[in-house]
Amino acid sequence: MRYQTDRARVEGLGSAKQGTGHFWEQRISAIALLFLVPLFVFPFAYNLGDGYEAVRAAYAHPVNAIIAIAFFLTAFLHLFQGVQVVVEDYVHGRAGMVIIIATRLLCTLFALVGVYAVIRISLGA
Image (cartoon, rainbow, N blue to C red):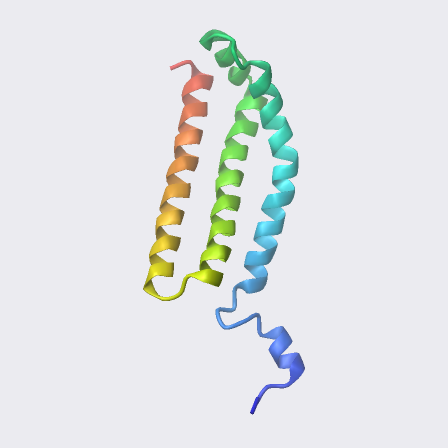
């Protein structure tokens, strides 16, 4: 027997009270990636095969460096959110929590490595 009305169940956001927020964060990051992927890929592909100096010159331009950093941060956030949804749906108990924590750490590490690489290249270090 249910003790909530239909409206109360709809407004409840689920047991964790985070479902709607997570849904919108994932959609917003997907929309951001629609713009960031081409803006990242075109300078990257244009300089593919060139020497280090040509790549450094391309990413020394602040717009290219900022777009690359935004791309890495948004892409790995979106990756984590997607993996989290899959793990929450199919892996239960302690194993699910361990996988989510490991995924968060790996995505954070990869995003930071990407940001560090762009900064090193853009500053010519």
